[in-house]
Length: 142
Image (cartoon, rainbow, N blue to C red; front, side, top):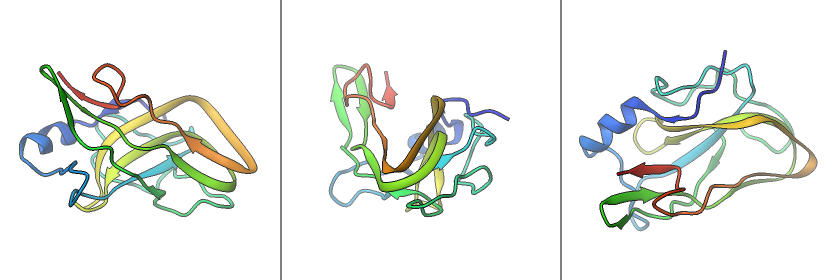
């Protein structure tokens, strides 16, 4: 099993169909769930799954709600990101994550691979998103 970082294929199609709303005001609710290295997540992932999801102190199944930074256009590149996600005083280990749209039936958006397993032992566990820019945001259309 593996966690392969990618925008999911269904997300790309659903954006063209107008399913996802990244507006800061009145937009959809996006969540981030954390996974162990045994999870099988990739561009083929279509919805949130609990298979391979972590457990531990300070973590609730389904993950955390993200703060959407809104869609931005720079030249011909559209992009968006989220504020960092933090699980305070958590005792957990995770190797990757799934961002999904909780408003629209838990549809998968992007799979994140952390490049290794990270652990917190009673401290904050954070997922730090890259700078919200047309070259580094986790969701980019160019």
